[in-house]
Image (cartoon, helix red, strand yellow):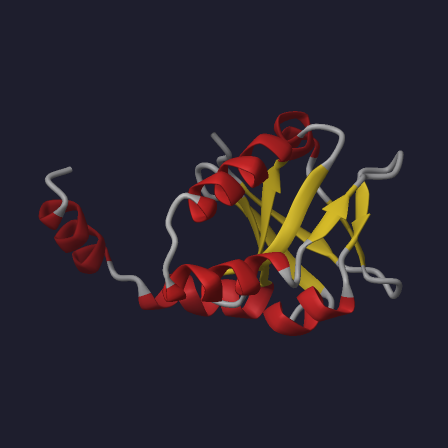
Length: 139
């Protein structure tokens, strides 16, 4: 399970350091694609295969849209010796990633957010809303 948050920068070539604690769980090769809330979603090889299998087992017009959303923008990532990966221009544009980013664990995946968008997202989530959601889910 991926947990925690790190602040990083994207360099002029579009590279970002993936924190060591995430790289250890992700493995030597992992995958990035468009995520929810205009983020970059990163999955381990196993997570990527599970997503593909899950989508393949649910035939419908909506699944076709999801397949196109996830797979058309996907890139295979291999970190260099410094732990950097090159994010495609397409993914950086989609997520609005320019310089300051937040890399956070989100359970089964890692997310990369534009730092300003991450701060805005978190400021919009009140304690009361969290408690209401937890209550509705019987947590």
